[in-house]
Image (cartoon, rainbow, N blue to C red; front, top):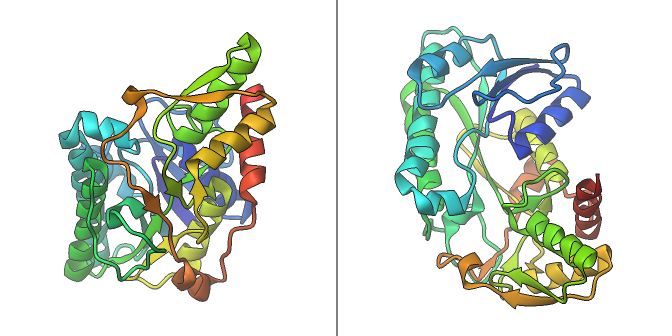
Length: 310
């Protein structure tokens, strides 16, 4: 199978490409203007890609592919808060542009790809129990709202053109190689620095939240499973079903790093739109594909720390 991956130079994109290649697929990688250094041109064909450019999008969809994994967009909730318009332009508008171009090719009988649209669990908003796909959407941030817009574009395009679209709603995920702009690698980096300098405190945001946190490698495996066995028109949670209190995550990372540090709240690191609890029920995904997480969260944290050591 030949698979087009948008946002291929991002954190998740890199792991998705590894998983696709390991499974024997051919990859066409669409990435931003700065293509990753050291890329393996023999295994992956790279395209410069801009969601806001119609010409760029049409060039990408002209590829003869069997499937598309759409990861491109604004991935940072903090960045979306700084510029909600950009979040909507990329995540909703850019997705609509890409799906329309794919849908038109499908309508003309030129291609018939399965398209996996990667949304986010944040579309659900606040909840006190594990969330299921039928739960109402109550986005509480520009990032989440823009992803609701992307899902709307997927439904409309599928109905109008017959494009086969599967929607994944992943819950928070981390792993080796993630930017320290995100919470787990940020904690790990600050704790390592505290150990090096002998500092007794480490700045943190709100630790009194709980997240269903997955390993990025398990998430990549779920995406491949959905390409093969997901039902077009359906939505699937990608989740472990287990909540990880963020305070406990901090303490576990401190133990792995080997530092006795006290968390020090910093108001600048607290997001006003933080959800108190975000846990998912992935029964639908498990039933459809057989997928379950394979990597323990403790191992994920160790791998994040080890990756920062080099």
